[in-house]
Image (cartoon, rainbow, N blue to C red):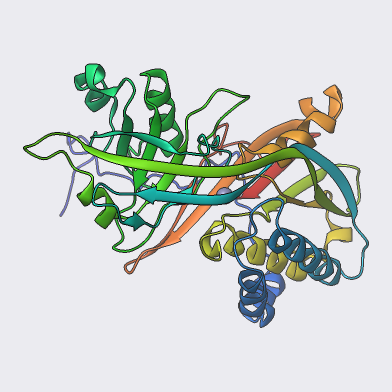
Length: 367
Ligand SMILES: [Zn+2]
């Protein structure tokens, strides 16, 4: 198509993917080749999963921390790390049981930090709020008081997700006596934290969709269920493990991943993938870092699935000056769909910060 200079026609120009003032950071081909050829990535991932779910305070978490320390030292070219103590309110479940109206029991999984029921259990009617949106809570406000609220668990990474902890909080505030959350996968339970802070709370457990079906209201009225949960609570301590690999200056890029998870399975995606990726990145970068302007601070947090306790303690341990120097945190949650891999940044600020900003510290965390 010919267009004269005085024509109204203005061809569309492709938008530059990077503003010119912010040069693209290109990965060194050598580092790229090391990452592509990394045979340890998969075996690290499997060894981490073999530690099982890594719930904070369990032998599984301790095994994983020991493994990560050993792998991280190796990946960092032998540099020894240091551990910061992380005191927290320890919790474990000794027993959980759900009795159905026909007298049978159904499998259930206590949500992390749920309160216990009385020894006889919580016996109450169950009000099924479907997905458990704020509208559904509002529409059934008068039905909730004194009953066990039943809602559905949602995929974390979808737009518009309503988090389990929000639903728990809505149930608690509306006067529910207990909280049940059912997942979508046949036969599978839901694990996760209820997000309880302090002493206030209601007993909470994850159940399967089949059990949820049995608890739906029928023509003859609400179903009843008895939830029994026994717990132990005591002060506990975990750790954050840090390895500093110095660059030319005393500025740092922090790369972190959390070690702990939940105990139903192996916490493979969240966060064995992040741990294996962090180890792989350090393995590839370690021989080069001393030539870089900034060093890398590798941090492995735990008690992170409990309201981000490990990383919060770490930030509290920094001086005011050190905190001011942090300019960007990028939290990466990655999933691979059959069609394409996706990385979802959940950054606390815009990602468009110049990498040349003086005195900057960058924090990348895999969660
Ligand atoms: Zn996580």
